[in-house]
Amino acid sequence: MSDFYFIGDSQLPSFVKKHTVKKVIQIILVLGILPKIVHSQNYQPVIEPCPCLMKIDNRLVAKCGNLIVPENRQKQKGNQVKIPFVFVRKPNQDSTQNIILNTTGGPGYATITIGDSVRFNSERLAFGGFLFFDQRGTKNAKPCLDCEGIDEAIKISYRKNQSKDSLVGLAATKCRKKFEQMGIDLSAYNTIESAADINDLRKVLGIQSLTLFGLSYSGGLMLTVAQNHPEGVKSLMLLSPLPSFVNYEEHALFNHNEAINKIFEGIEADSIQNKLYPNLRKGFRDYFTAISDKKFTINYWEKGSADSIKIVYSKNELLDAIFDRMNNNGITLVPAIIHDLIIGKHENHIKNVLDSKFSNNDGLSYGMRLSVYCTEQIAYSNIQLVKKQDEVLPWLAGYPFNNVNHYLCECWKVKPLPKSIKSANYLKIPAIISGGEFDPWTPPFYNTLIKRTMPNAQILMIKNRAHIAGFGPAGTTFLTDFMTNPYQKLVSKNENVVVE
Picture 1 (tube, one colour):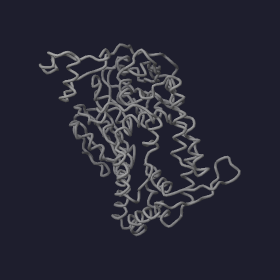
Picture 2 (spheres, rainbow, N blue to C red):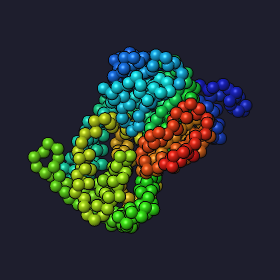
Picture 3 (cartoon, one colour):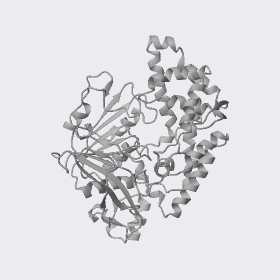
Picture 4 (spheres, rainbow, N blue to C red):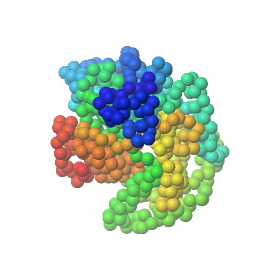
């Protein structure tokens, strides 16, 4: 029990106080009583100054460095991690108040883009100082959990028509063993530790008022920060958040189906589109159900190769051709793509998909992605429910909606996070939550779940947009209104934005 302490015995039932620690534990296990326990902090977060990884306008005040904290806060005398940050503000902006902290989604991507710049008149500085913070295990952090063999395993699977999961699994296993030999605790690269990293950075920088800005995965991370470390958190700005408490895998195909149904609804309600693509919903479902076990081939020229190779592809790559375009730039192309695929015009669309498969995903630290998904999503996803989606949605059956799955997590071998990570976030702090109606990954439904236990949250549902929809079309002032008074009810005068 040396790593834990009770916060005041007044929080314990009176009959518990009469017993020894051993007896208390027995009572807890029998009756399900769970007194509040926290890890004692016997370490001091440290900042190590370093050159800025971004180009900063010389009129701005900048502080750049690495946050140094334990890799595993339950083993505070063990390994340390170094996580870079860039803190910028105008000279007249307070360094302790109204700071926005941003960390990117993924998980597995770096927030700080080396060589990117921050201008004096940057929109990021409109409300106060801005703090870019990477996540542990990503590209700029030490250690970085890159897995070099993953991209090559995917390419080999296509070149030789072999099982992608098997080859990627072998590469992931090799990667895990390499990190284990280096003494890295892969189970420590998770949302709870990252949330504690953000709180430690806030404390060591002396920030008293912080707005947390997260997108996709990091939206859920910011909710965890606010839940576990509410001190100093003023408000939340969340773009298409993936809350940790949902079991994503169990309804990921439903998310995809819901998004594509929105497209079909739009076509059916538009006389011109409906005439151009009649019965597209039925055609899509019938075609993709019928080809579930069918294989196709294409002659493909890999970049830099003098000869083509014959590649076998399936329904999965055809669905990639659709869902890869369900973003804010490509959403209008989706009806034409579906129509092409149904009538057998695969070639150009499949080449685009293969170009993506054969490119190197240099920005992704795959090991960090595996650790996060395996510790909090896959660990709590019921594989039978995951498969049940195939029965209900045969046109999407078998589609690999994520590049992390149960098989790969068996190869990665990390420990699940405490079950508390799957509890909804009960928070009073104000939040603005944005979602796009065509988002196949983090649907507006997730925003509704988040808001249900956050009475001061407000939702922006952005029409005609997908993942990372923004905080409203050009000319709208939702974000400014929220940052000015986060408790005031937002009002939409734009037909493309619904405020909930």
